[in-house]
Amino acid sequence: MNVLELFISSILNNNIALVFILGMCPLIAISTSVKNAKGMGIAVVFVVTITAVINYPIYQLLLATNTEFISLIVFIITIAAVVQLLEIFLEKFSPRLYNAFGIFLPLITVNCVVLAVSLFFVNRDYTFVETVSFSFGSGVGWMIAIILVAGLREKLAKISNPPKGLRGKAIVFIILGILALAFMGFTGLV
Amino acid sequence: MKLIRIKYKKWFNIFKDGIATSNPIAIAVLGICSALAVSNRVENAIAMGLGVTFVVMASSATVSLIRNFIPGKVRMVTYMVIISTFVIIVQLFLQSYFPQIADSLDAYVGLIITNCIVMGRAEAFAAKNPVKYSLIDGAASGLGYALVLVAVASVREILAFGTFLGTRVVGPDWINWVAMTMAPGGFFVLGLMIWGIRVLTKNYETNI
Image (tube, rainbow over all chains, first blue to last red; front, side):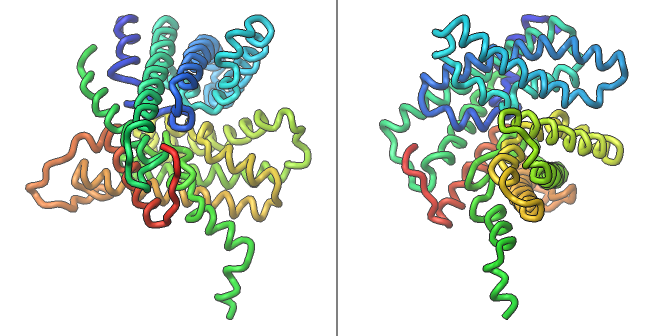
């Protein structure tokens, strides 16, 4: 598949949040304000791309030594290490960036988007270049989803008056459902 | 007499807590990703539910067994390694005995690692309690998760394919709801279900 096509399709018609339903816990928990959503989104784009780039050669190494069944453990350790390193690095060299999204970094280790991207490139036999474009696209797609939800929730908090039982988490699911329906419209685009 | 006393026992309360009072999906809203992604067929939901139950029980028991030896700073990574070991066991088991289910669950079996329920139970309960209670707590959370998963999957499978566990349950005039097989169906069914449960238990949130 064309690299650009893969990038666009992983943002729109194969959006990782709204079509594959991944990374829901942080999406629901942090989408209360657009500002936080943006910080989390950028952090996810960073971490997803970097971990996929690191995990790809590691997986090739595991394949070469016939030990790919432990790939899960290796991936999760890589992710934890990358997140930790990125946090230290940002705190030291770029305090401004650290203030913008540093607090979201520890939460990312348990964000399933990061692990899922690593597992998907294994299942779908992507080449290295395809992996880079797929992982970056997935990160951007997730960021778009969380910002959309956060924007809708901010507006909703100001103007709407939903039934008592629907407040909080339940209304977020309805919003996500409608957004997912909208994203189904992109099917067949690429 | 014995039956009345049972509800004052500690294990009974832990069990009730996990399945009903603080059900991981319906009340705490954790572990949603896998719950929505694999719940378009009851068969997949049962496999996933049992898989998660096994992983929560095993990892809670292990964490609780070695809780006094884990240094505080590296405890998260330790939990991760323990959890991924059990997830690999589930993955290999499914691949060799139920290859068809393993196929349709795709990468979601591996994603049990990042399921917040497993990590949450290890951190919130198993790290502070003896093995016996951690095992019960793990079983309760896992079964509470499986219960909601199967409920959502039943609704979705009937509406989307007109079948239940592969047997046809609707008349010949039935038109399949295509949206139910995909993401939107999962979001709507779970959203409405949470609404229903919140109204029944009068457990409301104040802010939107």
